[in-house]
Image 1 (cartoon, rainbow, N blue to C red):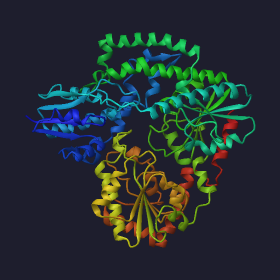
Image 2: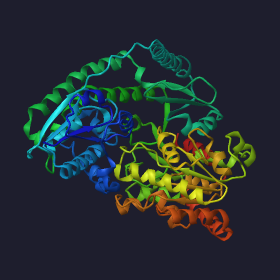
Image 3: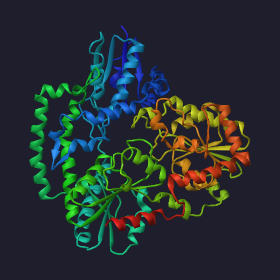
Image 4: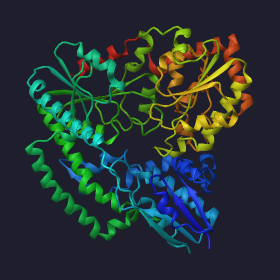
Length: 619
């Protein structure tokens, strides 16, 4: 009998080991757990052995988007609150992309391994953050059950047995202090800001996204900036604006509403449970999604929707308090979308400000805000292509890139000495795609093997280029330093540095060439007239219509960057060209100017001012 033991993120390895027999085949679907298996010298098969360089995920985003638009149509009315369908607010957070990824992956694994039995963990704890298989709820187990229901394969479980956690006094007091700070900030708003007769601007987003804009707004007469978020954030300090934490915002009125709607939503959920017709509408191909989603639906109706109602009512309060406009970095994620739609109901203006690359329909489409502050013509045309009214998209330039125009860089020698790198080396900067592969969408993210190959070829190319040095600048959201270090160690490659927190502006200003993978760091390099190679524009699993809007494709198509196939000789030749060939450098720079203008408008350091002027016009 052939037995598969499937391990995922969050699984307890010790629990799983007790179920394993001599003829068990372990399949590990999580890179972090791979390290644990290796440390115990346990043989296993990796995720990459089944992904076929991501080809099994081809057009997964299209499939997931299509299902996300329609799956809730028969229960939508049961989620209505004050003419807002609560389930519509969850579209991006629950896009099913990871469920579709898992279905495809599991089908490939079963077809290839032909098991008689599958063992996996089941945990009845429901994730409160994301609709991802890796969140350690029973979604994966239910999917597996659906896939093998007509096959002669048995399914067993190893139950989740959490280890007893030691009481951490430091974390306990940290959490209590965070709650206290949030309540102080909320009360400070009510006591100090609420009575002001200023034009109040509500900003959703981190300081890193909007710091220049907040500073500029604070300089305006009769303006008050209030930042907000679901959880506690920085406030009180100069330039940070005042801060509201929605999680700890409460009034007697809101409490009464939540109490009433808790009963209503509970009754509505019972209607779904009792209606077989509704349940049968959840079928997709041969999968009964009701069985897969049952616990999620329970969570939606008993917790998530109540949270959304609370946010709507807080926005109603803020509108009465005199909030004139809400600024968001997006209007498709649940929190931002909820506030934007609630703002419109209260005739409060809303403006979404572009903070990153456009190019995928899920990024800023459909637009819920009144207006979009787009970086440039590329984003405006792309939004119009997907149905946004032309009058709603205003080109402002990129406020976060004003920094690149208004700041003077350190000297090359000073900067590289500050990070212990020889300034006389030929500096190759590599900005990889971040390693959280189960985000939306798997077909856009490179597999472990692909990422490892990119790094290996970059290091090998550097070995062939005299006096060169590689700096791997990790994505701010990344956590995986192990991969570049492991690859470098396996090659005995020492002329490199892995960093996450180094100043990107200084790094790009002083490097010789940038290698990137579908990243805005390429655009930032072009603003600084630095040559760029994109090694990630060939991805067969991406739908062509989406791919042609991607930023990496535009770099190469416009002649502003060189494309390199994932090939050592080609990459080495391209790096040498960009470092040594003046004609190529000049040609690329000429093309860069047009692309930079089309993508991010005027590089005059005044994009922030243009956004402030737009805000003034709107209110």
